[in-house]
Length: 113
Length: 114
Image 1 (cartoon, one colour):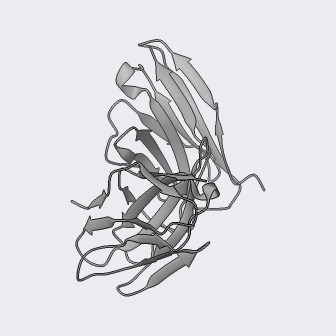
Image 2 (cartoon, one colour; image 1 turned 180 degrees about the horizontal axis):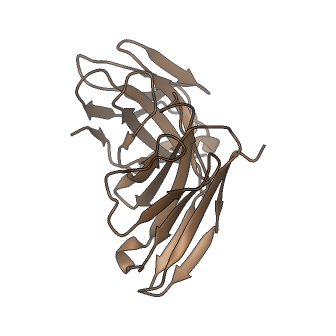
Image 3 (tube, chains in turn yellow, purple; image 1 turned 30 degrees about the vertical axis):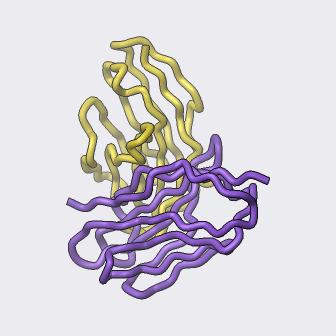
């Protein structure tokens, strides 16, 4: 089992470009999450999906959109990237409506020039 | 809103030293509390958790006790190893017994030297 996978691992964008970060899990979990990690800020929740077909905003949703494509996949889209979106992005999953543990992917390091 | 405050790092210790990383929280109700660890270049991994007051979470020699009276969940280890060098995050979930919508502290970097 791969667990939680994220693609790509690294990406460099120019301001204004768009891209989609992909997350897939083979753990049969219902809940999926997108976080960003910035120095001195810890992890902050961008969006989450409690179950297939539902998505909700987290703490810092501005500039992002998400799609819960099916139970396995949860993508994060930047429509017009800005330097402030330079960060490391983590996807996580949990069993049920929250489970008792979140499982994290390896992260995507994004730089916006 | 909910918040988690961790001691600032980095924390530098010699191998076999005693470790304490302080964590306090602000939340309504009865949150669940977690410690996650992030090794260089990797995602976060759950280290331990506690879901109700006075519970003690433990794993790999690390321990933390859920203290509701002091709203704290301090991480301790009696004898650290070089392999424990990592960033440690304290987190809470507002719903008892779940890991939904985690709020994280800023992380504490631990460096262990020989």
